[in-house]
Image (tube, rainbow, N blue to C red; front, side, top):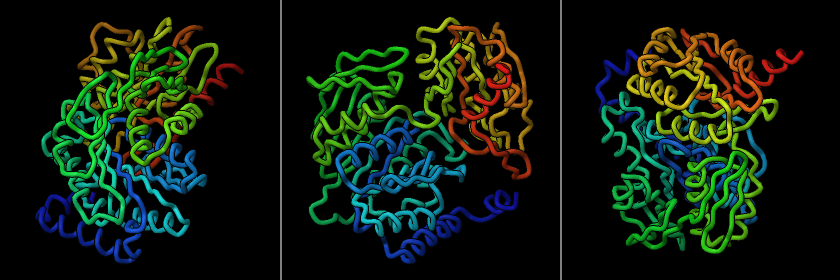
Length: 427
């Protein structure tokens, strides 16, 4: 509460100076650790954590020492720690400390999931990025940034950071999703190499384009080709092909052989909380982080394949965050789900009933229930599911907390709650 009041009364230029100063002080304190490493920044609206995870796996398969920081976990080589901060890109001291720890453990690469909110607070400053990759750009954090254009420009700051001092024999590389309507903007930044990727064959005046061909999406696997090389992966959905292509681009840009990349990708069973199947019988249950309209549409499209009925459990984040998207998410659920259960997600200090009212404005003529208690909502979804149905619980993925009023945090994990509630019903 005090923090939000201070933000309103302190002039923006003083807040900027405060954030930038702490970024500099933290970098000085830890000796500017990124200078001795190859730093990969992953940004975008959806899919960032998946690309971080896949890139980490590819680099390790190629026998590099690598560290990565994402909304899911902090990992140095094989050692990982769950991100319990409820913050994708931690504060400046935490990020610099992580990079310093990675350097002490002789990591050649460090991968940083770099968010617009983090950029807005200069958490990316004094990190010497060498590669910047963007997954996509969709409306999000509009209230926080003031407009979509400001949000886009914040993402662009990561690519602008590539114009900094070059490390010896290490080129600055940008990697852009050519299927995104903002691709030209991100390709406009000056770099040594520009790479692009696409779900279909495309040409572009850049150094390299990687595209998939003959892709097929099944209920239990996804198949696509790059040239003559066939990929058969366990990650589901068309959107995950795009995420995989981003990681492949990063690997190829580091001269890693495609067969090594293929091996790493095909070993990947799942990404925690990202279209993760947690129950396979008598019906399927998936948990996914989808919290934007585009992401929700994509996971619903994937989950519906081969199902008798799609039962959806969803809510929307409180605290005044992106209220515009709530009826839109209701509309998408209405168009894709046979049964909808609206519930709490992260209400913060906002009235949960008001959040559900906003979502319900977009729902028409559907079998909809409102159960504020998220555990009870999940229980109800499992109770009404029948063999051949799919239950999809969205919004939180593998997040370890539910953010409640007055700053309280409730320990949480949708995946574990699903298993616990299903066990109760089967006893």
